[in-house]
Image 1 (cartoon, helix red, strand yellow):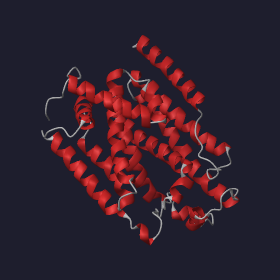
Image 2 (tube, one colour; image 1 turned 45 degrees about the vertical axis):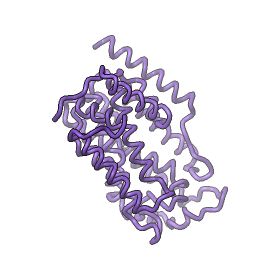
Image 3 (cartoon, helix red, strand yellow; image 1 turned 30 degrees about the horizontal axis):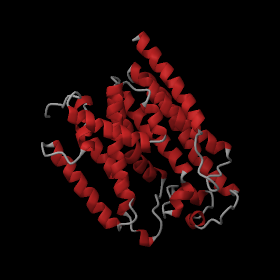
Image 4 (cartoon, helix red, strand yellow; image 1 turned 60 degrees about the horizontal axis):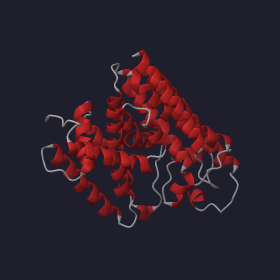
Length: 308
């Protein structure tokens, strides 16, 4: 492994500044947690987020055919691998991410897995019907790649010594992604994507096509509510792993993880309180509540520093 660049180098500092701007503009729930981190860790998290954002944008650009999107992602990753092996920088995001991976010992294969998750939807032929997952085990693999891998990267930045943290971080990522899936059921169905397992839809008598063709303003049916409640119950179980993860990471990083878990869990609770009406509007955590959670996180960070 080559020598890590120092954050004092202007090029690296500028690269991190670009990544922070991307995170501030795009991260929504994540950025409120970033604020509660010490600067070096915050820089690294923002760099990883910017890398993820680019992969997602390439994957979701529906102005291009799926095959072209796959090709562009492959080319982008080839540039990343070349840069990691000493090639010329392809931009500030790569510069920041390479520094972050070297600084915090992030295994390269985790970033490869992260990008593999963004391309899973591109592997299916949309002409044959919506993107679907037959079982929860199939969906778990997708959630692992797009969310759990992020958690495994983040705990390296947060710092941990107990190996149990890795499985708990994996399951925390599952909780977050299941929450996202619940929130985005209507939006995803409109894009020909059904992330609710087919076995669960069948068990509750909900046809995938009914989610795609719902009439505007139609109330949530009892079958739909029971279906979504099944997913929420699974998510609640995985949020218990997040609580067990908190004491295993370094003290100064715990407030940031606490903020992230609190915001995502609050989102799940709002979905549950709405009676699972994720069709008439996109449910979100109000800004004032996010700011309140962030303030508590900052207070926890101050206490962590005081007692460290």
